Each structure stands twice: as structure tokens, then as C-alpha cells.
Image (cartoon, rainbow, N blue to C red):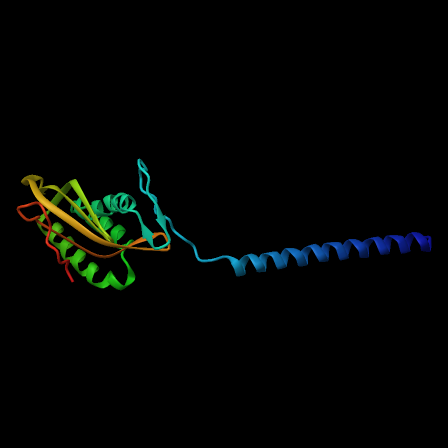
Length: 192
């Protein structure tokens, strides 16, 4: 074998090794930089239907956005059946702020026991929405069934939620429900 050919092949392999080592180093550096600059995951809840202009920016949102977000959240509370109440309430709890989880969980567990013990089903039909700052109130009619028998048809009812927008995600900090006053308004104070 000729020494010159061997020297050329050796130099060529060293050059290829150097190039591949350099590319590997650049790739490793890019992966580290990507990991360092990747922020936390932001979950943006988009309403099921976007039929009007609305906006959410960081920790604030338009009344239209608050209305569209609150409609499906209230449905988890208001439209229940003994077989679906646990899943509905657990889904709702996924949107509850951590600092409010304890008291809200207690109220939901009491309501769940009531629904299951009495074989209660209820359906809520919202007719009016009121948005005041971070509080959304849905007023409407509710039907209730016990063991499949209609026991209340068209009772006026309201569901009210206090929602905080944090990193574009809605978090429920409080909620209450009840019967509106004669003039159609709801009581001022929320449960604490």
C-alpha cells in the first residue's frame, strides 16, 4: 500500500470525524438552549363557538369571552344526573383555582351526595347573562326530576361564578346558585 494514499484516507477520515463532532456539538447546544428558553405550557380555553368579537389578554378578558367560557362551565354544575354527576363535578374542579378547591369541593361533594341519594336529575336553560367585572351570572329556568318523575318545571334559578383569568386560563375562585329575587336580580353577596 502506498503511504500517500494511506495518509490521504487518514486525513479524510479525521476531517469527517471533526465535521460530525462539530455538528453534534451544535445540535446539543441547540437542544440545551431550547430547553432553557421554553416557558411553561399555556392552556388557552377557546369557547366552543366563536360568533362575535371577543378577546383575552394575559389576566383579563372581554365580557363576551367571560360569557362564552362560563356557559359550558355552568353546564357541568347545573345539568346533572346520578350517573353523570361525579364526572361533571370532577371536570368542573379542573377549572377551580387551587386556593378555592377545598371549599368548592366540599360544596360539590354535598350536592353530589344529594343528587345520588334522591336520584335527582336537573337541567338548566339559561335565558339571561350578566357580567360584572370578573363575575358572570346566568339566570334561567331549571327542570328537576326525581327518579324520572318531573317534580319542578320552569323554576327560576341562577348560577354565578367568579372567574380569574391567569395566563389565559379561566380559574373559578367562587360560585353560588339560588333563586333570583322577584325583580329578577340575584343577591349581592356570594357564598364564602
